Image (cartoon, rainbow, N blue to C red; front, top):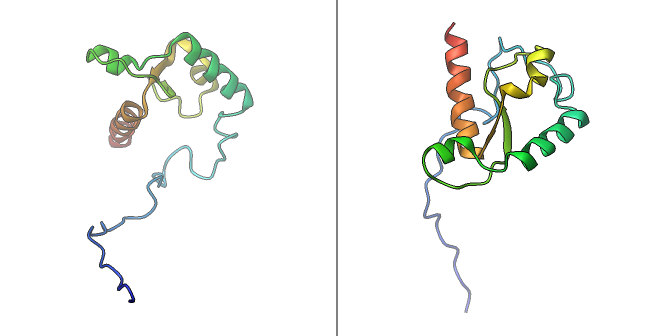
Length: 112
């Protein structure tokens, strides 16, 4: 007996380009990750920060305990090395809060 193929049960959503598309007028346009400051030195600083601040600050404010995965810059550094390395500008976030917070922050900055 031969089995027939099943039709897809989930409709595909239309795409609008890559999920990581950057605004063409962004300061990041054309720069590599290293050129934007995310070097090995950053990876070490990030790991040390997450060891000291293991929980997402936004989840904590909501009464939820969730491990942070990202060190976010509270104020977008836009290539400013001093602001990039200012640890008082850092916060530990989970992926959900980082992605939603960063998107809101970047959308506001693009409107200026």
